[in-house]
Amino acid sequence: MSDEPKFLRLTVELTVEVLDVDALQAAALAEIRHPDADLNEEERTEQAELVRSDDSGASALQWLIEPDHVLQLVEHIDEIEPREAVLGVEPSDGPSEEEEEEEAHDHV
Image (cartoon, rainbow, N blue to C red):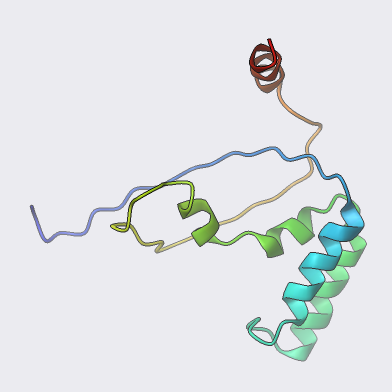
């Protein structure tokens, strides 16, 4: 096997239903306040305000997802390491028609 690095780009699209925006925001605010968060006081204040002012919960959810969480979806593999992560969370109108059809088949 070659010593040349090999990279794979993993793309995951996930639609979640937010059941409790307040709880989601509280969890994100706890992460922002955590001493290990790599933020100065001004950044903490700015990020906390973003989370509190976003009624969709998208800003809060961004604080609660890390690349390692996604890697845990791949079982029994220790041979991969995250090198770059770009995370985008945005409001959605709900599951796509395809997702709703798959869900209906799962319940039959």
